[in-house]
Length: 131
Image (cartoon, rainbow, N blue to C red; front, side):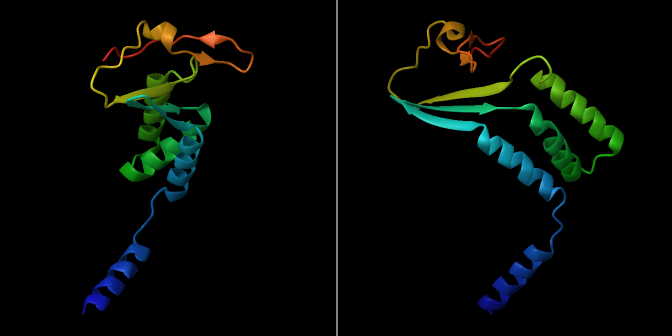
């Protein structure tokens, strides 16, 4: 009986629709390439870059998942790119998980954390949450 249950569950999983599965696989692959984790003393630093190549597969996957019309998908795309400011910046998410006995002190964040271009130019953050 237990075996029959697992066979039925397996067949249900195979027959379930996979809306936008190619898009979500592509978006996930892009995010995997642009994600880094690094351990520090009493902390974990997690960095994710959101490149322009992410827009189309991300929007397609979200549109398929939510059942958006073409107009809604276009509106979502505009909102997504506007929020990330992809046209004028290099958006990234930096998260620092602190698990030590004391709070992490980054001092002046804008001077403590910067992107470095291939040419060696250091670029401070345009904006960030202070929490």
